[in-house]
Length: 428
Image (cartoon, rainbow, N blue to C red; front, side, top):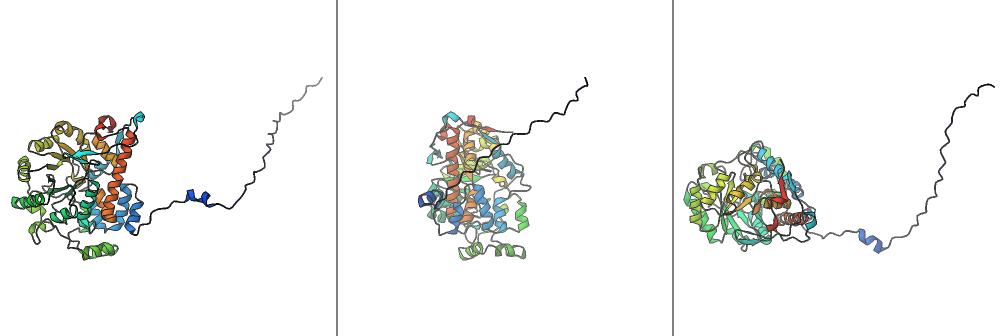
């Protein structure tokens, strides 16, 4: 019997899958009740600025709009930092690296953001920091900022180098919590006159800045030929021509000058501050201010535990941990990283505030959790001012307030007093 030759194995063919017939779609004309849920109506704003601001969700959105609203040199003056901008970057990086630690089983729907600043109630622990040359950002300047702060119930601080006078700011915000920031002048009579004027107009607190023995070098300002008033050169003409509205407002409103000094005073001249300002401040100057002012004193520019202790020992009611927003000494300490140590050292005797890098309500909440009494903002409200005057400052304050509410709610914290180190971690 011969051997059977095996045949190749052929796999079974794949089964043919029967496809179902498509279900026919029935068409009809839509009815109004079907269309209405898809329609989004927005309130109509006659002012273009209000339309722009209505699209802003974060401070970053406001900043992007601001860049297009003013000449480049003006935006750079507000936006840039000193030297290589290392401090500017580190300030923001410190806040970005924070870890917020929620209690998921304790989330609350409507947290209370109110607190106290210098013994008085505020709806949220925020203050508007002093900024020089504010009318460069918008012709309404300090008046608009003070009015917005008053409407929100938070303090506003007028700078010695403000472009609106002490009296005019008080008139713009008669019910506001106005503070006066001053640089001690070598001629103390000038500083004493400022204090008398601020006291006469009902200012609540005096803020002494201690980190400006000389003005930090901002490279972009030098390259832009920045000056007060703006200089019309071949370099700047094209930039100014792209912002005719800004130019028209500057030319048709009150002259741009340092309005806290008398007309023609050498103290009001651009470039004279380093010559006329006190160059060697000491703790005894805080004591002098406390006696001369007779009210709450805040010391701004503290960057060490030792300086905080000496300031409070000398009579300060509050200190502001600040590296001037990265505009003075580059590579200086980051205020947020210094905060816990300063609170441990003086927090039982004085309020501790923080600025430099604060950009959101979450930043404010984190600083409060680390022991701060309040946070100050500068650049954010100036961006709002650039976009829409007082309405822009209102928008920035509203954004920060809503972010605070949301952050506290998600953290599981119902009041400011409940915030503590357990809610935040500084990541290294």
